[in-house]
Length: 142
Image (cartoon, rainbow, N blue to C red):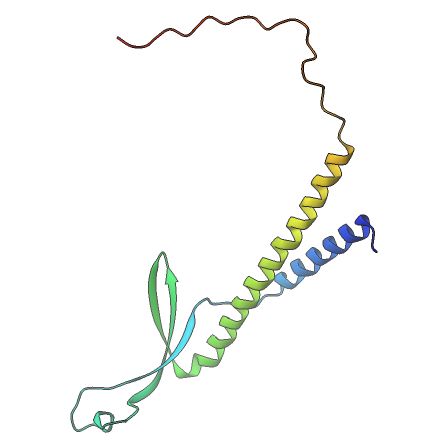
């Protein structure tokens, strides 16, 4: 079984690895990419037929900004790049979450080390003199 020092070293190494991976994160973009087909509304168009797919596909990126849903139209030429940016954003969030968890374990280990090496607290009731009595607070009622 590994010692606590080995465990702490492994956690610090994991934090360093995660920080290095975060430094190499590419362009990232939050949101969801959606493929849409629409109907134009002209009764003679091919999209008006029963079961017709409609015009498209058109692509849009939907995400939340300040509590509101924002939709951005993505040109067909930019769909693959947008997919990669969304995947990179998901990777970034996973790395950041893992780094916080590993770092929290390192910090907890440091606190345990301080608790075991700290001098014992002074015993309670060490003073034999009673404390000075304080005057009672005055009433603020009028």
